[in-house]
Image (tube, rainbow, N blue to C red; front, side, top):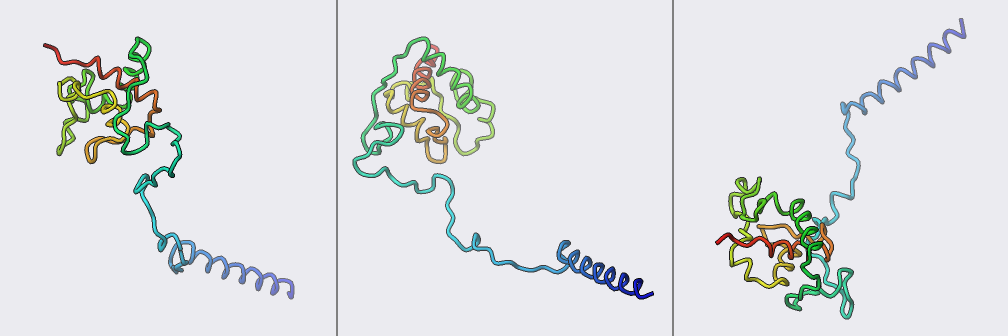
Length: 170
């Protein structure tokens, strides 16, 4: 008899503990735990990035130092470079600028405020290779994303060499 009483007390205690735990588990009773993540400053990716330290060369080379002007194209526009540029263009640019570069890609109709640039027009083709490279690297505010994190320096030059082949038909 005494054994049954002890067993009943132990099981009763376990049932009560389980019931209390279930109240907390199913948020019947909510406990606000302090979270310091909510009160600390937060930044979006690439929001106000720090400039490179003085007298240093960034990982991407001197081409990414601000205020040095448009760089010169160090990559020869041979078959290999243009083919590689065409492949990279189809992955990163074609969705907006279209297969022929006329700004009529698959998502162009959904861009209401600004349509993608027509890469075949003289306004683009008359720019220097360095200007095109900087546009691909830094993007255009509120119009085109920067591709410096998606493409290496060499790949961006290959895309520039491919863009040169997209001339408007006479």
